[in-house]
Image 1 (cartoon, protein in one colour):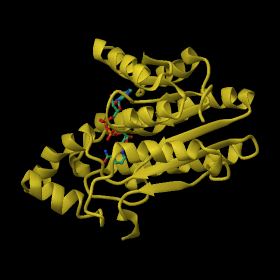
Image 2 (image 1 turned 45 degrees about the vertical axis):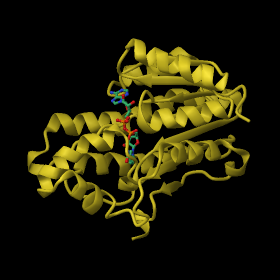
Image 3 (image 1 turned 180 degrees about the vertical axis):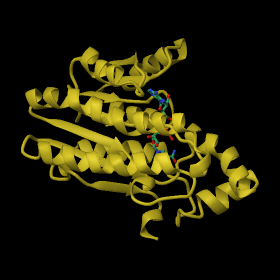
Image 4 (image 1 turned 135 degrees about the vertical axis):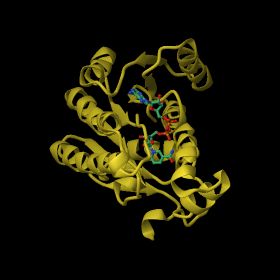
Length: 256
Ligand code: NAD
């Protein structure tokens, strides 16, 4: 049902972004994949996605930590019906030890990039008379954990940006919502296991069981396919009046 729509998914050569791209492609959308690298395997991902779903897919390199490249990504594509702001990084450290460069990078990639892409995409959606902005926030957009100051601040920020975007577009058949995943076992989560092991002095299994899934009452990781299907739902007509809100896909984490 998304035939003829162009979807741009930031940070989509891995994890949740790639999962979302698959589901949007399956629903018929033309896809633009993005990340900071420009390797043959990035372009091969686009080719595979195109062949699997029979839609046009291209890969466009752009660094979501830079305002000009965020804006340039959308400008270069020239059309954006569905914008999924997904690129994100993580760093785990107590506040006094948190490197200020990491703070700046997390705020830039996880929060400011969505402002810049949205700023360029909205006029395109307005001229098309329809649009969907989906910001991938987190359970950490609604609640906090120790040692994740920049991430929690950025994710709370993106929930705020989601509400403002929704208000500014409310009468234009454009919606903006935030998806708030709990833990999904992607490379981003894999990468924080060693640091969390150190912070809490735990083994890998203890971190998964006692720190990560401890917060997730379902005791299961959410999946990238579930994130993709949630985004597809937000693009559907059933979701046309859903705007300015958050959808938690977190196994009950934020109900605690
Ligand atoms: P991931 O590391 O697999 O994917 C992150 C993506 O962002 C990758 O494609 C990476 O290349 C890209 N990226 C990183 N820096 C970039 C930059 N400067 N410019 C462009 N792209 C860049 O991680 P993921 O778990 O799939 O995370 C995707 C999003 O989901 C993030 O915003 C993350 O905060 C959010 N999230 C993840 C979880 C989880 O449990 N995995 C939970 C809640 C929210």
